Amino acid sequence: MKIAPKAVNRLLSALLTVTLSVSALALSAHAEDNVAKSATTDNVANSATDNVTTATMPDAATMAAAMSIPAANTLSGNYLAGRFAQGQQDWSAAQNYMNSVIDFDPENTLLEQRAFLLSVGALQYDRAHDLAEKVLSDHENAELAAIYLTCDALSRGDNKAALGYVAQLPQDGFGQYTKPLLSAWAIAGGGDVPKALKMLKMVADDNDPTYNVHAALMEEMSGDKSAAAKHYKKAMASGLTLSSALLAANFFQRNGEPEISSRIFNGISKLYPSNPFANAMKLSPAPNITRAADGAAIALFDLATLLYERRAYDSAQIYGSMVLLLQPKAPYAMMMLGDIAALHQQYGKSIDDYNAISKNSPLYWLSRMRVSEVNEISGNLDGSIAMLKDLAKDSDTHMQSLVSLGDLYRRHDQYQNALEAYDQALAGTKPDASQWSVIYARGMAQERLNHWDMAEKDLLQALQFQPDNPMILNFIGYSWADKGVHIDEALKYIRKAVALRPDDGYMVDSLGWALYRAGKYQESAEWLEKAVSIVADDSTILDHLGDAYWQTGRQTEARYKWQRAHELSKDAGFRAGLEQKMSKGIDTAPQTAHQEAKL
Image (cartoon, rainbow, N blue to C red; front, side):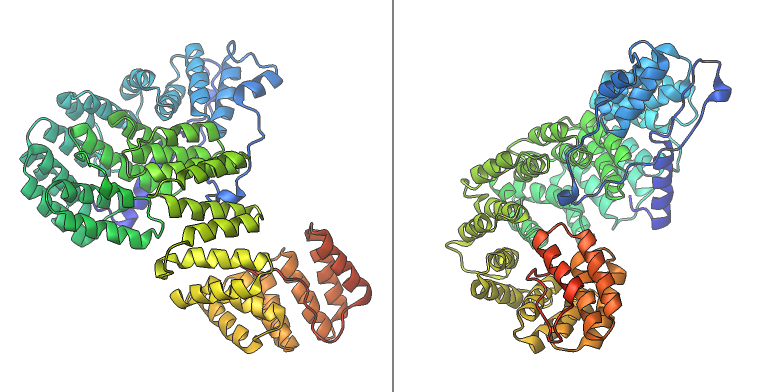
């Protein structure tokens, strides 16, 4: 259903308040006055894999042993170990410890609810079912238990029981999105599709893409492919998410309208230059759904995606786990759970999740790339390289895999290997706009190898395909300025880049440095001061500002900036140059401080 922004915020607030919000350490069922309640929000992880490092924290059992806590024998030991395991995103260990806590304090409904949520997130469905029944009867905030039991009933084909559980959901909060969709799917599962569609129409209009996608799925499940096609076309007119676009493409590919399917995949290709879904058209697609549980899984995955995008990872884990209850091995859910595990450095689990994705899924190639990335960030560089080389042997994934291999080498300063990978990726092809990023990356590798003539050729060709790309404009402009060539053109390029990204401290630094190389020291200092105000602790920018201060007569301030740059840098050669400047200053003619082109 289409939910207004304010309603979305209220829904997320409800989700984050209830999900894993119980942090009570009650030493007995009668110690309720000592129970502390604290709302636990989801951890916000950095999604940039370059900044992810291997976890060094001990696991929960190790921590318990180090603290001399007999985790299997005390309530407090199990509770603390469970909390620690949850903090490390080890859902399996966390639910195990928390369920042990309940053995000591079986009447504590707060701990009961927490154990239920952890059991869901750990895919311990039998235990989750038993706890959900108790939570639903014992606890006021039992919406998630009702949703879980609805999903459990749908997974078993018990549509009548599913309707009974979903009826217990409120109309707002959790129920605002889930109640009409789950109710409609339970009704459709019972064979009354017109009644199911009527229920959906009560909370949506004819042009709502969510309504039309689910209506299409229901119509096809009932055998009315003509009605399904009309609904998919209406949904396409209003705009589709990636997952719903693939549902539509799958339908039209199976039902005699491959040109529509091709149009959808071509649109996806524009958003994903290295398109991991291109091979989906070569597969023999299976129907999107065969039972009501599959439709409910799609509905819950949309909600899980919303939570994931808001970095509400604990909540996304729980809803993703319920998707798998409804549709075991659902590729989108497996991919999301793998991503969550990787973000929290649970690398073994993330690889298991990615490996569960079938070769027949359009997500298979992307799952292989994820495994490669996890190998890299966990320190298994050889494993990552071997996987990418193996994928490059397949004609369908040849180019994408070689580009990824080149990027990996470049991240690890292996520029010659990166260059060879990019050359192989581009071999036998006529460069076009779709390849600009590969040409740009090869140009950067060439620059680092001091092959400037070749680098310049690639960078200018990438710029032809992307004339307003601030990264390319900045890289070329900075490189020219740093080399003392084409200064006027360099300033033109960098000014355009800064106009496109005025708050990018590195591009502002490029402008300041180009002005310095042009001999415009006062203007240079002003721009470099702005760059430092945006990026305070970058040694290169501080070095540049120190040079500009020196040239404008502010020698004490210049030495202070150089000293600060010296403290921040770990590059011995760079530090030696700074020591020389701090001791003797610099000539009045501009000197090239270093050759690093800013990205």
